[in-house]
Length: 395
Ligand SMILES: [Zn+2]
Image (cartoon, rainbow, N blue to C red):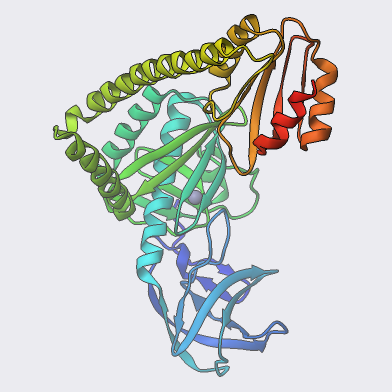
């Protein structure tokens, strides 16, 4: 089933496709062209640089003393975009940025493990994949509950711990016809199959680690419903460990601030939220009583209108107090909020004077806006107590 021959793209051997793709290699420079946009495009007789494809960015690294910034397949050529020229015919040593590439291999194999398990367990397909150095997302075609995701994460990490071999092959046409494998597209011609022994087989062009143990850790960091299925954010290897450290430090800080163990931190936060809710309720009742007291005091002064400024920022409390004020005075009860950026909000209620027309006059005279019914209008005006008093003196 295994074709030992290394496959080519045009004149270049694809070393990045062999199992356990190498990070270093030697090659002969076949061509080097100056690019219109600057830099050079180098063609080698063989390369371990993975060209961008299948949702994964290209490798970066060095060819001798020259930096490789990007690698693309254009037509049937693998082009290494470099910052300086190389001499045609010379032998160069290629060195891929190994840490970055290894993390990508870990993530890509991790994605195959998870996608394979999801397909085998739920029949869902992988319908989207993106792998950068910051995050990996994978989209699956059906819904998964939090409990199912947890089970999948355990199962994926069991595959890691069992250390299955990961083998890339080009099966012959006859084998390929009968081989069950996952694929996003209907493929023809030579198809590279990445097999995780006993777990999954999937058509794929990217470099993978040579055994699942090298993935280290597979963690589903986030998930959300997406286009009828799910989008999963997955981290593997050291990146998973780094995420755990970040989260652990956050939980630790919360626990310390409550002087409790990490296991008790959630209960402490919930208790605090309950207390805050109760205190907010009590504070609201106090503020309401305070405002009612001011309204009654103003009413006792016997003025035609009740005008009160700096009544806080709770519209419900202002409405509640203005109702009472309207019942206690001959004219209108108007309550103004505490000013914010030179503007005050108002609640205006009257049991005797129709207010709807007044809201327009109020807006025109005091530079504001608002509206409502004949009994109650609400809105905002410029914070100018003297102008406001002068306006209502004429109502
Ligand atoms: Zn793949």
